[in-house]
Image 1 (tube, helix red, strand yellow):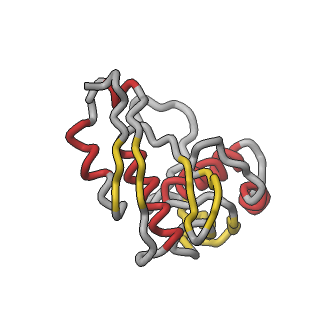
Image 2 (cartoon, one colour):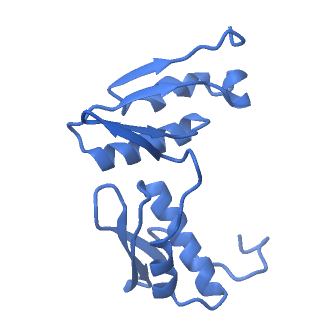
Image 3 (spheres, helix red, strand yellow):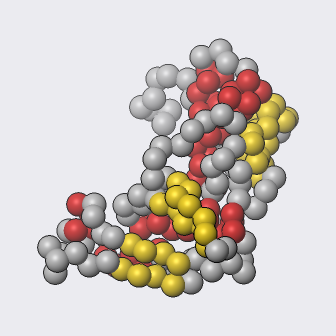
Length: 164
């Protein structure tokens, strides 16, 4: 980075200036730390460590342009996620249905980990996968697909007619 990046750098993560401390198992609530000092707290509808890390980077970027970290953290509380990103679709008879457009194994793994954190270890997760993305259709990630679904208790795979 030092040889090829001429702009200011904000280091985020375990070894960085910016860190997130999870307050709930699903990472829907977390503290924002800057150089080890708490500078904000986030309570939002998103779950998963991947979303927590994205939120932390957004707070760091906001500070870079003059927004106080506490204000940025509070603003994330009203963030509305994109459609089909662990979107609650409905609940009936104790069954909750979420929709997520995880289009490759890394995203599937992160989504199922986030969902497992949200529902706990004893709730059943049934995943239904329809391989519609070009990456899936081409079979690029086929070796990583089965392991990425490991956090689900059952998996149903829809095989469209146009995918042999």
